[in-house]
Amino acid sequence: MAYPLLHHSILPAEVMDLRSKKVLVVGLARTGLATVKFLKKKGAIVSASESKLEAEMKEAASELGEMSISLEWGGHTVSHFLNQDLIILSPGVDPTLEPIQKALDRGIQVISETELACRFINVPIIAITGTNGKTTTTLLIGEMLKEEGKKAGVGGNVGEPLILFAERGDQWEILVVEVSSFQLEGIESFRPQCSVLLNITEDHLDRYSTYEDYIEAKIKIFKNQRVEDVAILNQDDPIVMRYEKRVRAKKFFFSLKEKGGEGAFSNGKEIFLKLNGFEETYSLSQSPLKGIHNVENMMAAIIAARLFGISKEAIKRVLNRFRGLEHRLEFVREIEGVSYYNDSKGTNVGSVAKSLQSFQEPIILIAGGKDKNTDLHPLTKLIQGCVRRLILIGEAKERMARELGSLTDTVMAETLEEAVLLAHRTAKRGEIVLLSPACSSFDMFRDYKERGTVFKEAVSRL
Image (cartoon, rainbow, N blue to C red; front, side):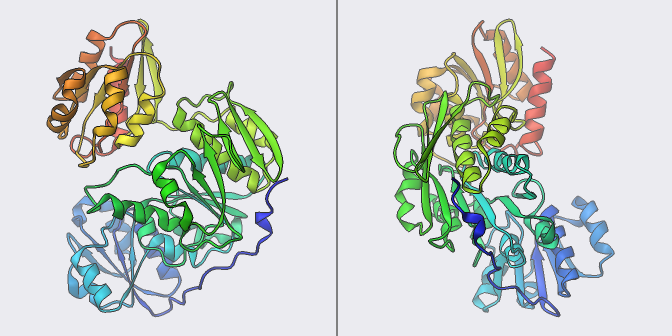
């Protein structure tokens, strides 16, 4: 009873002949390094440009030093960019940089690593995007496919870069790919046979000049889909629904509010699936995943898995064992009736809102970090309603205190460790201490993982 999507033969949009082409890779983190190696194997004349100093990227510098390619460290020069046939941007590289804009003005093709990879992939792609939940949903779908015995590759913005799957294409029947707005910016022909848009809330406004620019980047996931492809959309998200008319693919919806047509609905305890005239139910009583955001992720994953022929039994086995991601609403420990949760991956307002809605108990919320300049207003009612105390840290604490501090008892801390101690001293039995920052981590930590680890270590010492 699955939609026969796998029966379509998938052909690359247009395989690129890279032999003797001058190709510049911008950004030399993990994805950029993999892209350089791929291009070399394809016979391109490769050069690279990186904003960081060579001393900051010793591992990449060591590997690249053996490849005899033209390298630029510590910044990007216009002349280097203009002497190319093709420019590949790694995820996170800002396309508005002057050398990139000058290259575009000159008529030089500029694409993302995702676009390059898709030119060499000839198996179906399930692509997942959204402000929150991308990684969980990507991994869930991948697990469901593997549980059925499918040779499924899982990567993109999580795990291995997509370009590595282009290199080993014959190993896979299907790819499950997490794609960020940064990766979608630079696509031309990237066409997933199944696209998933989980939600859109304000994020990365330190990078995008307007919220609308960020939205437009996200919905590029549908740009090249055809009527025989499928799209899975969050019916409860007003921004997603505002743009659903631009989706040509066959649409399936998931919702926590309305039990409508084809797709999935949940009351929080069960998921009801309706596809091709059949209906079935999935109990959530055994699932270790906590939070309403994870119910949405599970609904999207179930629809995708069933559309690709995965059995109900395989899906249920995955739902009942999948524990979710470290640093995403992760239970740490209970001390004298107080439960501590690490949600360091909650780096934007929409993510924190979902986390706050996942608890019935009073919450002591630790928030703050590097300010993304996003609107904090969506948190107002939630903080008034369920946050008994707000403890603020990091670069954003002053602004957050101005805009949210009057809503509840609010204090500031100089370090995350101090914030944990303040929470511990005032927490009462039956309450939740939640780290959910609504900010990135780069003012105080290497990344959200280090921040979450520091939180867990501080809690373990209490």
